[in-house]
Image 1 (tube, rainbow, N blue to C red):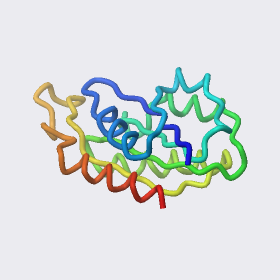
Image 2: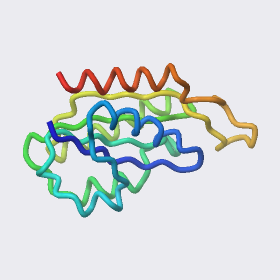
Image 3: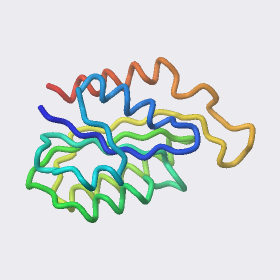
Length: 147
């Protein structure tokens, strides 16, 4: 199974940590949305989309990328995110999943974990996240996608 992971990670590189763990399990090509625009999406059996949650949404770069891409019918996708708050992630996942399904993707799984977040305070919340437990869960999630 040929897999592509498109992710946006900023500030504390929380999402990049999770993307790397999943990529290792799936032997996936790991790219940002700007680099992914040069990829031939039809070459991949599975595409992962990951982002930190920004104001209750996946990053605009991912939204723009998905809107601009040609989606092969029935292509499989999964979502993942890092977030300061699980309630924000739930809303963001629903919105992004809906957009993917409208574009013709079959969404086969979702993963989210807490991440260090300094959006509301310079002290931040969720220090040390994602931690090894979160990364182990991300690897386990990715492994389940291979079945």
